[in-house]
Figure 1 (cartoon, rainbow, N blue to C red):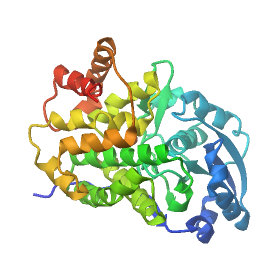
Figure 2: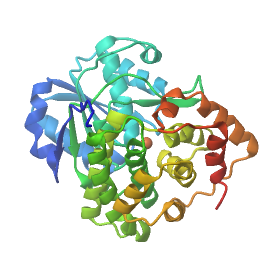
Figure 3: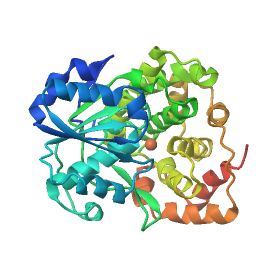
Figure 4: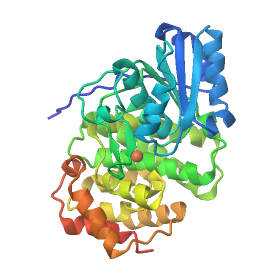
Amino acid sequence: MFNFNYHMPTKIIMGPDCVKKNSRVLRKFGDFCLIVTGHGSSKINGSLEDAISALEHEDIKYRIFDEVEENPSLETVEKAFMENSVHPVDFIIAIGGGSAMDAAKAVSLLFRNRITARELLSMKNLKGIPILSIPTTAGTGSETTPYSVLTDHQESTKKNIGQVIFSDIAFLDARYTINLPHHITVSTAIDAFTHLAEGYLNRNSSIMSDILAEKGFILFGECISALRNGCITIRDREKLMLASTLAGMEISQTGTSLPHGMGYPLTYFKGVPHGTANGILYEGYLSIFKDRRKIDRMLELAGISGIAELGDTFRELLKCDLVLSEGEITQYTESMLCNDTKLKNHPEHVTRDDIAGIYRSINRK
Ligand SMILES: [Fe+2]
């Protein structure tokens, strides 16, 4: 029996030069825009220039906050708001990877509600000012999710702020990913795969989320050899960007699962990039499933022969030499056992030994 409740309100516009070609759609959002981005790549890959050109074409005034760091903090979000709060900001354009888009979502809430960044964590059902997203990596899917994951230094972790905030529009132009360093293309692509997988192997999965995931597995699988040999065409990049956005649509319904919860301490304490942190957990994660029917289907669609081949492929692509001590495994396992949201999304019963075993699997090279 079909049983689902599907909601994903973001308008998606994809294609080369889609920002400038569709500048007219910016007009209805108002007269003053705040661009939220990082300090580097959007200036190099053409995305910032295109956004400015579109705004100027529509006679929309703008300011730029370009201080979003990797794994953005509550403090950065507050700074973006405080430095621009006297201006009549009607809407936000987020340009960058997940960090810029997640930070921009939180900033949009601050503009509408005039609260501190920390209050975002405790207040419920906040609405923000409109936000348009221009992803420049193919991995996070934040342009089509309601999530904003920020670093909370007080609690030494990354966390979803718990508000539902979708972009009004996502502009997908894969050309912005052409100049990414290869290791970032790989890490973000694997992040997208992990979204597809964790939404698919999820207690909340439905026919709708599975449709999105299954197309995403095919697209990802078609790019594996290009990721391996480094000869990534613009067509591959379009496939990876679409897979990432489909994954965002999927996990906006299901949420992510164990690897995303378990990867946060690897990023926070060990500095492992987000996609890599998830990817190195995957062989161990998939191995704890008792019912492997959906895993088999997923791997078949991606053209991968089994869990061991997936593990080998990810090890080859990610080149991560992280080794965890038993003390670290115990600490991270206990922390994960407090993450009820991720534990609940896993479709089977999970034990302490399962979690520790997944962490321990990182050390098997
Ligand atoms: Fe992710």
